[in-house]
Figure 1: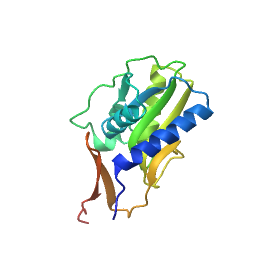
Figure 2: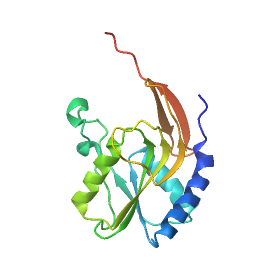
Figure 3: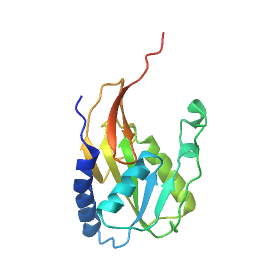
Figure 4: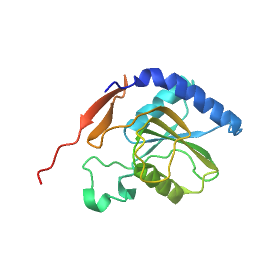
Length: 171
């Protein structure tokens, strides 16, 4: 499997995001990265846009609908939102969109903080394996994987994609 280079996708994503925001007359969006890979991608997008404003960080672990099955990840950290959510135009950034459940959890958490004016979703990769009707407004690349395949983002700099295989469980 040949994976795209994230460093090459970012300038195209930044341009597509600028166009998306311009078409909607959004002047001062607030960027929020979903921990961990989404934060790295959001930081890279902000740099590509020449912006140096505060970046919100979401850890959606407590909002996942599979929290009971998976339990608490040992590295859960609090979310950090250095700005108001109410009435703001948000750009939520994640590294890999697969089922849509992480984005659903992110939206649930954000709405606990207030009602944003709008939410734009940006994802480095869309794996085309959605279980929920969630689609990115801006995406770096779309891939289709075999059921046992996954992609992991390595970073924070340089960003790189690594293919992974799920471990087979004995029957």
